[in-house]
Image (cartoon, rainbow, N blue to C red; front, side):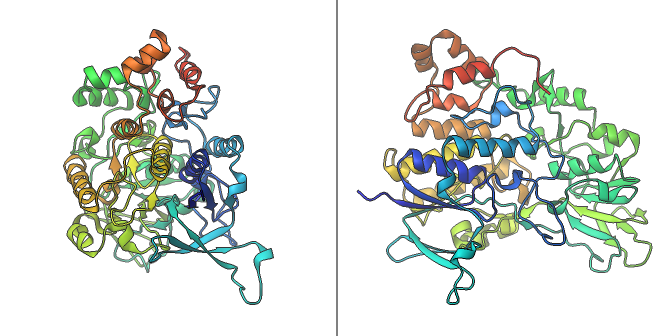
Length: 517
């Protein structure tokens, strides 16, 4: 029997686990990667004259906001001796170790850009791509263009490519430097300068805090007028994403008000004029425990939204409350990204013009219309991995999504419902999302980490059911699964493609050690 041919676009965290899972399920994959390395945005790439707008990259100091125990792939644990929170260089190293361990390198076509993916009458996909390999260059084909036919396409190249720029009066005439956080790499170029940072997500606060140590003054522009909930990495010496156990979720529902009070005790109260106006989890939280310290020293000053950038030589910026700051050397827009897949017809992403028009006022161009955050209802053989925003780690979700997709291709789980039923499920998801989260472009793809993983694992047959764990592994492991670190390795204990090393890995992650820094 001929193996289904699978095109995987992107070799970042999503593409690597999709490729590994295709091989585990005896499919025939090829992975297209624009750059010369795996790991996507976790690789540090300089911005210079030869590379003025590189592919997404970490800035030099970036440390991930999820603990290694919660972000690891389930059958290849991040080394237990590594720090709790990893520098971007260690994340990139982990992906290379993963590719080595599962022998993924021969299946990745590097320095290759997918330029178009089209749906064929026979329900397969034509993938057109350009490779930079000199050996493929001919007079007849100077751009090294190629076309191949695939049975299935898995899109894994993420949504951190097309920068979102705000629109302010005077931007075109402003004499100071203007750049996007996408291009930020280090603080040194801004030493002794006056800088405005626009945006209060993780990148905006990271950059503002880092700049506050070298710039003469940093202004942090809060466009909504109030700060988000700002979380610490650690609470009582424990990683914040490890506080929820299966037992606590089942029998001791978290009190949002009590949790909020504990957050305030640790990071300090928000200034009264900047107090969040919504509940703790109505926004995507920002992790930055040293922000208030820098705020208290005056090295960061929080401002309202920008009204106008002045065109004169004073390099002044006026804010909506009427205040003005002068001699601004640089403005850094940490304002996120548009969802953009230029090689695909847009209706595959957003469900078509009727749905797009219905949600246009709320979601703008950031609407996605995907069943389980993976499948466009009208196309049975294309999947999107990693097209979501969790309040937790991304990698375990992309792995379970990949396991779901390949299980579907292999026919070992129930097929997808009808397009009509998928549309209903997607509509219910967006309805729930609008009730739970503040309406913004950032929250169009929000999902609950634990709820999503548990539901997907139940359908896959790898959910760590309490009684089955007790019967198969005994009381000690059962106790760790119920009360300990809720690591994604738990999804390799039972069911298809369980891993014999899962028990030992879970026990290693749950050893009572001082938190590692």
